[in-house]
Length: 558
Image (cartoon, rainbow, N blue to C red; front, side, top):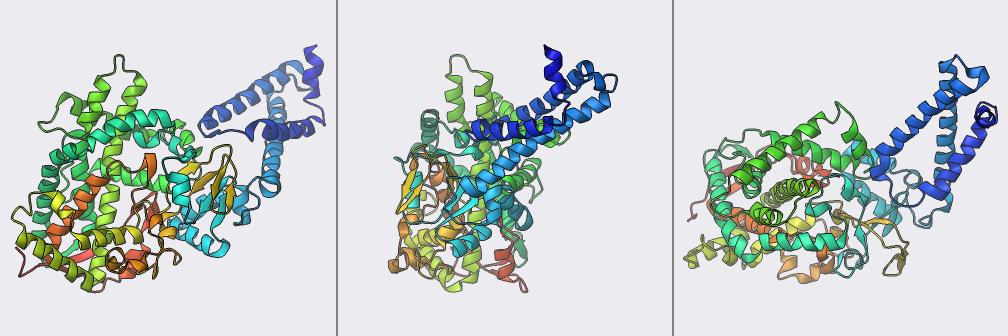
């Protein structure tokens, strides 16, 4: 009975039936659900099937017996026909019959996420690519087969508010099997773990962290004092500062970047390289499991996570005298009656998240704030005057961060820098519920990946007058310039909003107030501000180009 069925596979008609089978696989099976985490299993399964079929043909088909190469070629031809049918069906469906067909966008983007990925690799300023697409196609642009970029006043509320029906999209699987708080897609699981993080960044915890923030701020000031009158790459030094703070809060010790005078560190160098890859390949999350499964190519990834594991183990064995963020997470972990291997992986992922989420974003925000201040001396002078008045009239000025939070113009400058240079330029990914989502007059179909491009929506003239200009007064005395301020959500909103917001603001306010009251500063002669603006990289989080600044002491500094 087996012989006739196997012989059919060697007939001239067999590739045609394989092609039809490929179409059926796509239409009835692969078209539904998410397959990103199954990529490796699918690839291995396909080639295992080809190998098994080759042996079967070799053993059971008379004309192919004793010729394994011929049977292998036949099996590969059948597999190729199946793939051709599957991809042909996929391309026709995406181009002509997909549920997102009515939304405009580049034709190539309808067919594959490789289009937007290619743009990301080619230019590394995907946020500007997306901005150009919205200028051409309108508020809703199809940037992938099942992905929409949305710029609409109602979008932040609909997609990110607490009552939204949207969930996190497939991008959040890229660290699998590690699952930090940021990567949790299940809302109930996220809510449970978020409670621990909320305590870790509560008002009491922040008071414990404040001395560390001030200590590293003082170390940063020392390094600038040693370089007065000389070019200082503030991009690099703000990175050193933010990573020292967050490594202390995550691992119980800093990386020593400030103390070493800016010496490179393995963690930060590897992390920046990884974030570059995340930015380039964020629209093809299926590629990450493949990369991690490939020997040699995954060697650096394994080395990095072994390094993180060693840091976590060392931190567990050497608890600090003062609680840090990791203290709260460790307490929660140790309270588990029977911690699993997955629980341990999640603890390592959370330690990594503390260091990453609070460093790259803070460093980029500080750099962009000082870029705007150095380009707008009037705003810098007004901010210095506010800070001078504060220190002159507040005996405990350097002792209480809460007092700094009441400086109106300081917060306005921070907000305006965050508007022009959002820490996550492309926004974060969400997936609509099966019933779809209503945004204004637009209905978004279910199971659609949606994203609000932060850079684009923050620079839309419908929402902010003179959108490309640094005008802190739009948040104070000229609120008419903020036409639709609700779209400005620099720390996101809803259940997935940034848990470390207050710590990040503490760092921004502390560093800015200290540097502004002590120094005057200017760009290094010959540096074109546009070089910095053009050199920013959308690596999921914003990566800044070098910004060379000369600091000089202020005569009235106190």
